[in-house]
Structure formats: structure tokens, C-alpha cells
Image 1 (cartoon, rainbow, N blue to C red):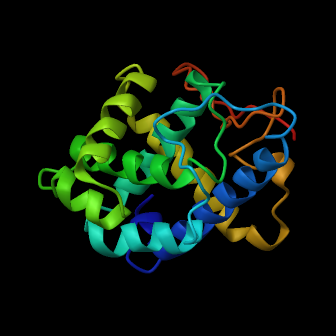
Image 2 (cartoon, rainbow, N blue to C red):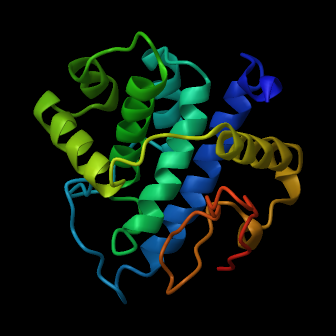
Length: 202
């Protein structure tokens, strides 16, 4: 998926990821009054004023991590959502989940990366909070950080295909699906024997 990782394509994938996350957060926000979510370290007291797209673009601009880190961060968000169904992605936690997923993916993927204090400044949070978020995210993932080439290819292929079809995106078929009990999950089954996409509707 070299095309996805090129400097020209990466901003498009950033835009698409932010669009998916925005739709997911908006949908789950509607359910907050009916199904109060479990509060976690990722939840802010108020909704951040910066948009998800602007926040992700800021991370992309200043983190200087490899393009593959954003794909791996996407995989991690998927795994986290599947393993933590009581913590649906919404407007109160999406920003902290984003900065943490990119931080963890950069540390796992890149030979050189910025420290937690730098990522905290990029994300607009304290270093202490960044440290707590990282630990909670790792436990939320069950420390399942390895991404096989097949899994990476699956996510890249999905992003690339959806970027080409973005104007006609159907949220019900989105990889960031809102299925099961109005909770956010992402869609890929990482069974290494099949790697087939699950169709989960809103």
C-alpha cells in the first residue's frame, strides 16, 4: 500500500479517518442520555473546541511519525473499541484516544520518536495525563500491539478503497461501524485465517 503512505495520499487518509471518527462520535453522542457511558481517563469534562480533523491534522503536522503509524493507530483504535465495548468513542474521549493511539503506534513502529512530554504538548494535555492515558490504552489493548502484514494490508486496502469512494460513503458500511447495542466498534475481524470484513450496521 505504498500509495497510501505517500506524502500526497496521507493527508487524504487523515481527512477520511477524521470524518469516520466524527460520524462515530456524533452517533454515540446521541446515545449518551439513554446509555450513560462508563467514565474513563480518556473522558474530558467538556467537549474539546478543536474539531477532530483539525486535531488529527495537528498530530500529523507535529508528531513527525511515519505514515504507517496512522494506519497502525487506526488498527489500535479498532482493537480498543472491540475489547472495551463499555467505552464507546464519543466527543468526550475521541481526542485523547487519538493522541494516545498515535503515540503508542509511533513507539511500536518507529526507530525514532518524540517522548511523552512532546506528545502531551501536541495534544494539549499534561505530561502526567499523557502517561496515564498511555498505560490505560495499553491495558485496554491487552498489550496486543503487533500488527501482522496481512492485518496492515487489510486496513490500508479499506482506507484506500473508501478514499476513492468517499463521496458515496455509506456509514452503515463504514469500517468504523456503530453496530451492536449502539456502541462503537470497528469492523475488522483479525482472525489471521480469514481477514474478512464483518458487515455491521448502525
